[in-house]
Length: 249
Image (cartoon, rainbow, N blue to C red; front, side, top):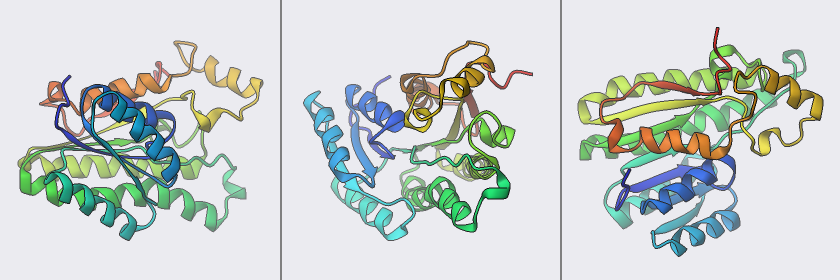
């Protein structure tokens, strides 16, 4: 997999899956543009990528704010004249029972997990149409197929189901322009999202995974790298589970 001179935008690139993916793109010589609300951390990761000989830039971006996204994308495009790869990794989880969920909870989860993906895709998709090339990879979740269940609640599952539907629609519309759009559905992954789980909850989750372990961020990053590389030249509209077998019937 060679990402030399590929222009990459990744949201939520400061922690967990997003951070690992950004670093891996950098190791493979991609030009990595990190979009995150935490500019200090984004800049730190960007400098680490540059230390490996790749090019990287950090942008303070709130994915729930379209003007914030638009400005950063315009800066990236102005600098490079193209955008080859978009990875939507920014996301939050909500674990409240549905009866305890407030309208504000709903808005927060949907704004980050679904509206943010819509905004970035809506800004970058026309660029990819004009250049007749592009790779979009959205991070969904097995919760989007299961309706929550393993981790996250009904609202979280609904937001990720929306990401799956958006991915399929964009794959259909983008295909004639050489745009590949895929999604990955991670199972429980050893990131900050599950760090506060008690030992009993962690055991319950692991016992529902045939491989009897959580994914590491690198496991998800490897799948992202493959699906955004030229090795996956005939894969689009695919919703790929990386879950240790958790969704097996």
